[in-house]
Image (cartoon, rainbow over all chains, first blue to last red; front, side, top):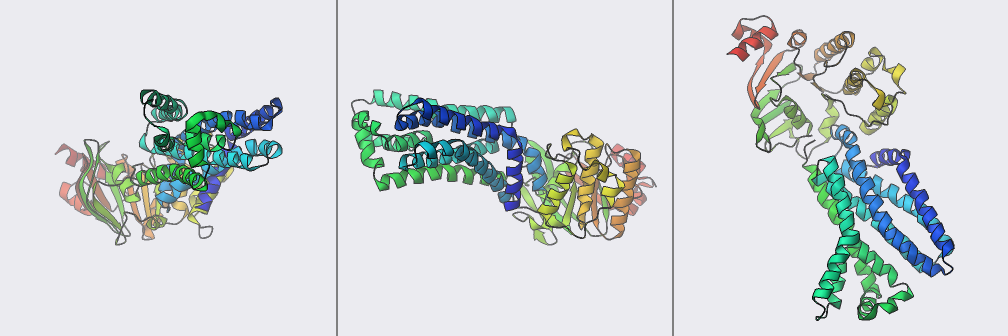
Length: 255
Length: 233
């Protein structure tokens, strides 16, 4: 498996897109930190950039990459290799490269300006988000064989997770404003990795005090160790479940 | 060596393989013949595990190939349209395959040399012509000295000189006691190579006979005319 991961990573790094992504993240992070006089405000601005850009780049780049390496996959499938190995190598290669890009792009500025628990949480969450969206992209590509449709679906999925889901939650909150929704909100937030990541970081900042009663309930739950472990577990399963299902599907696919 | 029993594969409502059963033994060179879309490539891909049959099974050396992968070490496959990572050079593709197969010694580089590939090693796959791609595919299929060679329209797109080299290589490998499965629409070139014929139509295997039996049945010496006679019937 290591061999194929090596070829995948080499191929991705030869492709300039990931390099441009790294530089863009780096530039954005430095700009944000030097614009704000308060580093913790800088983190907040950077958080918003990360929560939009990282999922977008991860999901679209991975989808395009998987479609473009159909030749490579076809070549490997006729060789003495397990299908599972091929598929998981593709996943690991993509996840590794994009996480590396994230670490290089955001990690360095964060370590300079915010070398504390908050910065570390942000790094962890950003890397997890990169991996989650690689996993979701691979699930989409294995279900949809057509390239144009598949990339379209990847864009829609990103739109759903970063915009539509929030709209849906707001709608729910207004409709059921008379009921106590604070606790169900915790469950609902687990259904979107981006929201979960946002909550995890916001609760490390002081602004959570301004979020009213919901903020208090969130702080009560996500502020504890069991709450944090719960959210990390949920984020992990956002990787594991799509990868597991996509691998199963790929095992039975005709090439 | 390869046994297929009641292999059926549907693509949607279209039956690509319909209850195909056959046995292929060592030391034979079998031509897989049939009209376009008769399921030849699907059968080959099922043997390689690239297509998963809906029902029936295929066994290789007595082992069911479903969920197996090591048996592919014994197979050299030349696809109909060789598709390779576009950004890699020929030498990178060759060394990658050696790396993946974990075989650096005992390689059969006859075809690499005969096709003049060493002069093109630094060319990227994207820039190659269809014929050169075919040469790379052929060289890769023979490179690891496999027991079974599966060639899907090997001479399509090759120039006459290269086609001749490939034919001689196929005959030489058959003489060594390997199993060669070959599909082609150019029946005249098969005459001197094959020992058996499988004829497929609309996903069904109509017959699998030795070439002598076919000649006797039809009374024709040339394969092309024998097949023509069967198709007319």
